[in-house]
Image (cartoon, rainbow, N blue to C red; front, side):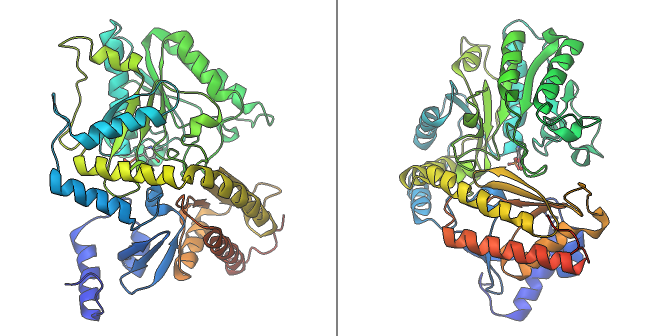
Length: 465
Ligand code: PLP
């Protein structure tokens, strides 16, 4: 069966088989049962095509991965070339491959602070799980095995493996799977909604920082192994920026109490915020950083926990102290070749600088959406933006979740040729770094029309800014 079949019965069979033979990740049954599966067959830049030949502007870059766009010949060539030499050999015990070594060295050059030693895995969840293991064993190696607790934050997402879920502070992901990893404790997120009553604007950073300090002291600093956080929480909560002084304060707490700091930049890394890494906006650097998603440009899965030499040296000081972790495919040879090509595209075309400039334009244009009905809040940085739909912006009245207005907007966009991500009533935009000004304008035009159409459809036109 050809990929781009024109045969209706073949298409119908594919749709049936899709529903019969697999369960998609985070399946959307409401959509699957009423509209059936969407089958994508081709990609080009920021666009993808479905099995019927319809074209879609992908404003979420294939789940925040394809940052250099689809169908880059440079990446395909790099994979092909490596495939002809050696498709795979594991990074195991004492064996390495050339792309793996080159990638590790390249990362050491790119990563901020002292981060320069990588441990490669296959997914962001695995990277976070590994970071937790690194932190625990690090303290054990230093004669402090009682430091096993990990502080994570409410509302942050760190993955779906049991370790990743254990660090995730969003109840929906945790339900049905408890009891999870022991020793995971949760601090409030650094944003207003976590405090009752809502504090004065400007005090949230200090309040949430004080809450982390109080938690450390209550639990006993000598029991805490690491703090894991996403410097900018991700698409699930609509990219709330850390309040001024918060990250610096967290770093100081970690230093004062001998706690390792883990930044999860799986979502925010590799240029999406207009800098290579989000933490560079605040000049605060962790002891371990986890990366994934855009790292590979979406071509072949690869992720990593990158640590400072101070951390890494605990695992290479002598026989018997090696990090007790690993998997068959971590640091897959082809994935490393693809990732090196992806990074070289980012550098050659100055995509990080371009993302910063496009981000300024996007910010200015998205803020004009406040003129539209339903637009409650617009926030983000670089090419990561979220629009929170609300029934009324002035009174901060939320929409009735049962209406599923965000889902309606997403579906409207899909029908009109655009893939838009929604988390409930938060619309999320995170296009590829290669998005052009014309494509941004198409995106903004459709977004505006979609929100207007939703307001009319739900009879919510009354609200204006
Ligand atoms: N951490 C963050 C901040 C993420 O956004 C994600 C994925 O969305 C993950 C971790 C998990 O990555 P993966 O889906 O590759 O396991």
